[in-house]
Image (cartoon, rainbow, N blue to C red; front, side, top):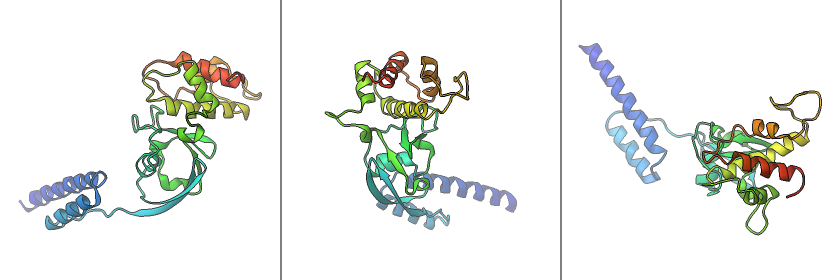
Length: 219
């Protein structure tokens, strides 16, 4: 009887703690304080968020923030810096909507913790260009209608810019016929390199045309 009671109590504590942890991520400070007080009254110990300072450069501007160590780079950009051009899609690193360029490499910002990028140089869609002074890739996407709903477009463009840089540096892909020579930016190369960026609207052929135009220096 005592053993059953202990098991039920343990399961109850786990459920309460899990719910409070999830709530703490979305509640304002006052709500979090009340949730912690309620947990204490119920005799349940709760994890205390660990914060850390992180300093990095975002779009050429140095920023220093005190964040929960569980904060992703995506949430730091969107929730702390209000750079909402970078989109949260699947939040599992599968759709590419959250793609940004960090230290010259494209990454899924939803899978990367902000504290991992101490001292990093991060570029988001806002840092590539602005209305009136677009990046050539942004202009090419508009010209070739490389989007429909536009939700995935910021990640697509950031990834496309990184793709051209990869090719210029001679980095091969799975579609490269010869790993010992500099790859040619064929349609097959573009499709392979952009395969991590999903477009539910199906604007893939237009995206290939936009990237090709920029690669050929016509944009």
